[in-house]
Length: 480
Image (cartoon, rainbow, N blue to C red):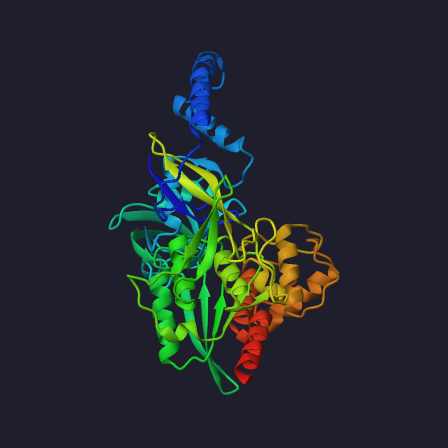
């Protein structure tokens, strides 16, 4: 049985290989008691298995019954982060933090019962094969998709590197079906993006971390080296929406900003015993020493969780950085994964993690030094719709459109999803401004234009309220 330590994503249970640690279990007396309880329970479990197999009018495979029992054991703990994952689920979740994936490189969504291409990744096999946004996937390898879940569709598209997947797609703009063959390939997963910014004569590095994955430390080094060589006088670290990831990755990031031998967090076991996590010189990466002296501002929001909270908690407690934004998610537990003989994994919360001041942020989050509420257009999830809505209709897609229109400055009386007269006027005005046919309906062309307008709005950093607050504070720090 292999055990591995890592920080999992909040809400999305992402399983991956982490720092290898063997943890002591319960006491000898408790172990004997547990063994005795298991021996007494096995006959009952076996009996229930047989009863179901022989008598149920709803046929079910034996493996599914076993997996159901395993899920039940994890569920009864009452911990949202303790769970059982099948072999397939565990492999899929491990891939989420991998440095690269094998696939076609396209985001897919389900809208109105249809499976739609949101966007192909630039330079990906999907883009090379000619897939476009709003293409509807009709068949995969000749098989229709009726009755499939989104997970089923994604599973059919995935495969081994170098193999091809044949797709029948419907392209609305051409009103015709097309047959495409896409060659699966390795798709790099980038977790760090950086930009050297200059504002009012001051240079500073802006570095965004979307998660703490396999390659984050290497990407962080590359980004910070570029910022230092470019003459950055301070850093803005953006972990907004970062759900967490590997402990080893956040350790490298924090370690590059803190002095060696600094305690950046604590682990606390079930007995309350604390183990300090200390910054040590990296054998793999040599970071520029200037990093440890640069002023740091960190941006976080309620979507910043787990490993990203380890970073913000360390910077805050050690007064190494100034935190701007909103209180973080609040996930202060650590999970171990144990491989089971059926290929699945049991994930259990076995430890708490505490900040350098020994604060447990679970359910509370890391407090900010300066609160800043973000523009709603930055927090709205972009969604696709292929349906058509007009006055008198009621739907969540309409509410989504109303919220975005209001955020862009159009006047509406409501945003509850009812298509009233004020909505019709706003939709008509937007379509005219966007150069789309002057109608008072929400259709594919409307939603496409709306998405483009919002994405353009988001790309303009002047509209990012929290970032502008951070830039203002950077000027304050550099002027002292």
